[in-house]
Amino acid sequence: MRLTSTRRLLLAVAAAPLALGLAACGDKTAEPAKGDPIAKITPPAGQKWEEMVSDGQDGGMILGNPQAPIKLVEYGSLSCPHCARFAQEGMQPLMSDYVATGRVSYEYRSFAIHPQDIPLTLLVRCAPKPAFFAMVEQVYTNFDAMNAPLGDPAVQQKAEEASKNPPATRFMAISQALGFTDFFAARGIAAPQANACLANLDNAKQIADYAKKYGADGISSTPTILINGRTMPADDSTWPKVSEALRLAGAR
Image (cartoon, rainbow, N blue to C red; front, side):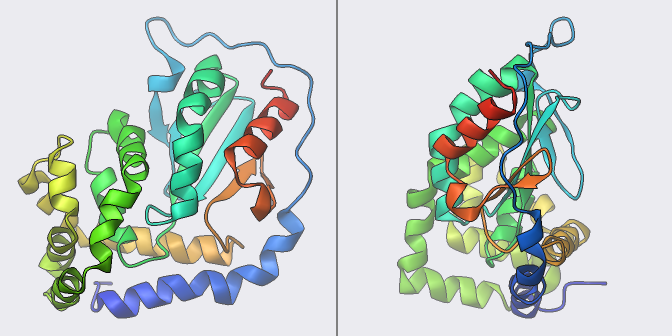
C-alpha cells in the first residue's frame, strides 16, 4: 500500500491509540519488579555495552546487552516534550550507570503520534545503526530550538504546502520546510542522504503501521515505559522514578 495522503494517514495513526489503547492498557500496569542485586556483566572483548546497538522488536532499537536481565523499553515520540525531558534528564545516567554495566538494555520504539514524527523517525534511522541513539538524543537535547519554528505562521504555511506534494517528495518537502534537513546535515547526514531516506515510502508506511500496532497493544501516551514487561504508571514515567525502578529490579 502506498501513502496517498499524509494528513489522512497521520490522523489515522494518531487516532489508533485513542480508539484502541485505552481499554487495553490498565491491566498491564503493575508495581515494579523486585529482585536481588545483579552482578555487572562483562561485554565482549574490545567492546562496550553502551556503544552496542541492535535491532529490537516491533520497530525498536536496542542499546546495550540484548540479553540483559533487566529490559527497559520506551515508547517515545520524537515530537513529545515529556519524552524530551526524560531524555535530557536520563539518557546519560542511563547509559553510564545502567546500560554500561550489562545489567540493563534500553529499547526505544518511535511512536508516530504527530505529523512530524514520521520524517523525524526516517531521519534518525538514516544514520548508521551505531549512531541511532546519538541522533535520538540530539533531537531531544535540542528539542525547544527544533520545534520553535512550528509557531511561525510562515513555516506552518510551507509545511502545509509541502504536505500536498506527490508521495515521493512529500516527507522530503516537509522536512525541509520544518528545518529538519538542515538540522541533521549539521550532524553528519548530508541532504542527498536524508532525501533518499525521506523518499523511502516503504519505511514511512512501516513507521505508521507500527504506530497503529502500538495503539492496538494498549500504548496510549508517550513516554510509556516498560521494565521487564511491566508498564510503569504514566505519572512515574520520569527519570527519577525509572532509575528507582531499575535499582529495585536489581541494577544495583
